[in-house]
Image (cartoon, rainbow, N blue to C red; front, top):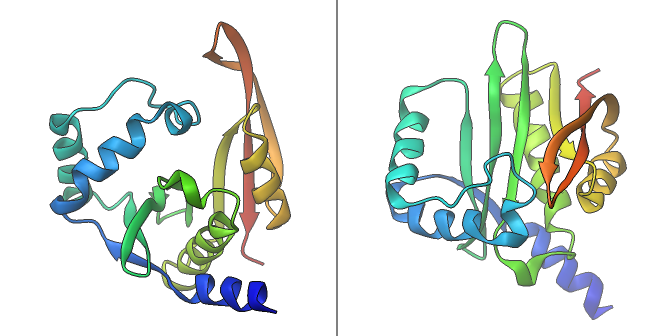
Length: 175
């Protein structure tokens, strides 16, 4: 019974907050972790100059909405909707759970559900997509579990670890 109670508590304590400059160093450190970097298109090490440029783009562009993910008010990751196309009402999802100790605890599911809810109900999107690398089995399982459908396979589009990998495009339609 205690385990169910803890899971409920975790779900209730996940919040999104608008990114401000005070989070940039932590975000840079998360994104530079090998265990995170390998699952992102950006594969080079980031520095604070990169982070400030990215942060500046958040305030000057309408094509992305990014958030810090908080658990019990402590930053644990970042997430958002990117490539937002208001005319066609679609966007792509981005999630980085930076705190490694929280992986495998269902928090990714909570974050993705909240992003989908925000995209469909607040931004009034019709379609939310995600590109997932072939070797990212955890993300593939997460997106499929939450009813995202595999649409496209971009064959051998990614070079990692001295090997070519496919990239899968998944989507969820607001019906």
